[in-house]
Image 1 (cartoon, rainbow, N blue to C red):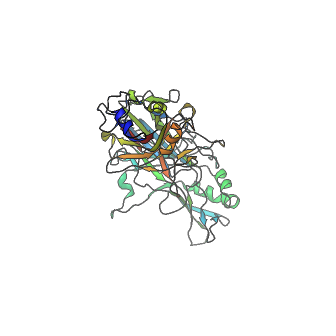
Image 2 (image 1 turned 90 degrees about the vertical axis):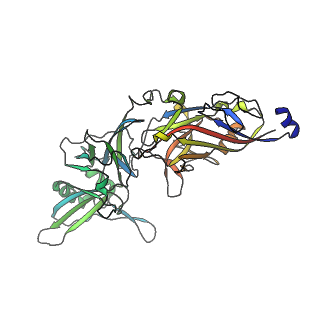
Length: 449
């Protein structure tokens, strides 16, 4: 067969389909994932690629879109517990000229606090049992959070021992009788409102000073909870969580208020107990787990640092003088892993794997992502096809460079993505969406000359 093809045409266009986790022979021209050249092929090359699950050293989630609080026992990823920390911050807004201005927190002399209310907003993103009520306590932090720091997901912050408030929620808490989205309000001690008002003259026009003067809060789940809730943070709007102070002045019937946003220091402390899960062997000390040890599956999860790694070292077995025309990775979700209790990932981004199975960084120590023209500070967003639970990732340029030997690479990693306003993708660590991949394919169109 090989001789006939070569005689007919010296330059052949081939479609190679590599079945990574399959016990069946490929139906298209290609090779078995295990390296057995038992499929019909124009060439007798043997190709074997390694798939594994890797764990990042850090999971920065400070100043993200969500803060998480709750507990959930995920049958795949183990027991997860999340506590949310946040500092109220002064509101900024866009001026007519396009610049950003501060909404100064102005208070006259001798204000009298009336109330302080935390308003929490949920987007519908909940992990676990959404029917049973989950209960939380709110505590005061022992010291203010660092205004300029992006906190890591494994950083806990000390808080006072006395609870300021206790509340319970389920999914219905965030929906009105007319089926519209609503916020949940929690009353906090009036004395804290007075503290904030008293600090206004010295800190009300500078966010860093305000943050340093006012200690933040912790939302901590009780041990019986069966769900993790995401609360939307960011610039002040009807769709974001806020802290509202109400006050008046002696002899004045006018009521005053200021809504602080949760757009300053904030993060989620998330702990993972994988001791009884299929990922029990995965740790920071042993941060790579072959798919052969996990029933030929690989994993991606937001918030945990878990990603899928693909190693392409054995592409050299395709031979020399190869020109890649197109290369597509296709990943499918394992059917039994898809359920409403554990929301699936919809957006993914690629990066090259650096030393110790970590995402690569540039000379400025910034994280880099794979793009069609190389590595950049953001990457291409690859979205899951909801109807088929598959995602296709174009790695043509990457494999062209690998086969042309213009770059050396330790492989690629598939990570959860947040979509930026420009449409690019960044690593998302502020949620627990997850993917369990099985039987991925690598389709390569190439010419051999």
